Length: 61
Image (cartoon, rainbow, N blue to C red):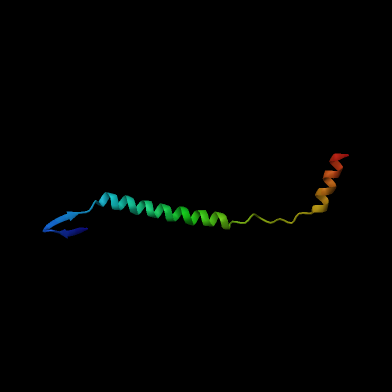
């Protein structure tokens, strides 16, 4: 990318622009991953609560 300034061509640092692009993409990907992680829900299983209570009572005695 070249800019015309006072009859001189100024070349912008391509390396810095590439680095900035990688950083921006990484930031966006991390943000999406963080949101997906927050939206995850644990697996709901059918649990017999009364059976678990009876098992604990049996272990106590």
